[in-house]
Image (cartoon, rainbow, N blue to C red; front, side, top):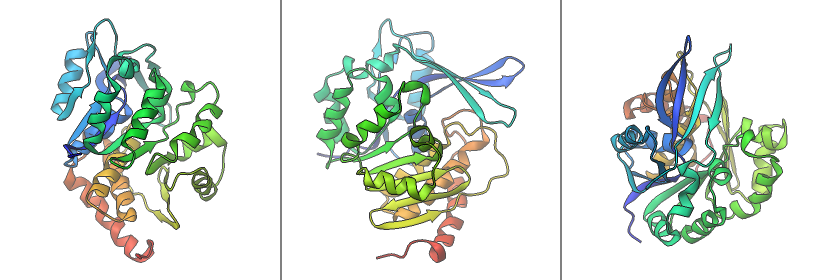
Length: 322
């Protein structure tokens, strides 16, 4: 099928309230996949979103943000009588973000109820890459339709899965682990953080974790550890990629989503695995000096400036090319 879009994401749009101190909040719009699409747009990719939007007072501004980001909304209907999900970002004494979500029965949870599965399958097949996360699996109704869609596009569209575990969404993490048998054979790359892994399996060494994900059927594993080197397993290949050092960190919300966008942008330009991870790390580093999760401070020029030293490092320390 003809590819009309570089990247399509399946996920929710959230109204975002970021604490600015003194009881004041900054209004924005976010969501893990939305953040990735916004960052991808800034890196030159064409994008689309599979979701459903509420018709509450935030609808007009939300849709305008999505249109400003040039995200195709042909599979993002507005559902009468349904609200948009919302979340609040506050910061602890160390400056780390803390999140509080209000998303029960939001419009986005009805994404697969409100649209024909065949309609969504056709759209997903028109994308070069499809991105989804465990948040989608947890919050959206009619989960089996998601798996049917993934199975239908496997082999035609590159599938990227962000583990993105939110403890509050899973009464028992074992429920998500049990799904790996279904998810792993479908996806081409899985993005994991050390925080995700600890929620599911407790504290363990990154190399042990990566090997375990491969044992569970994930062929290409990208394991991020904050400011520490990213650990990667790509088939039989094992390597690490440094993270750029940045002097100004305002808000790390959405950094992982920007990583996904950078990785996918490099992958679609047929870069080697090391370079894809380096691009992801550079994009994530660019995203942390502004509030909110949409990577509004990302630009090709800024990402390239952080990316090039990583590639240079990789010429000496990275995996040998075959």
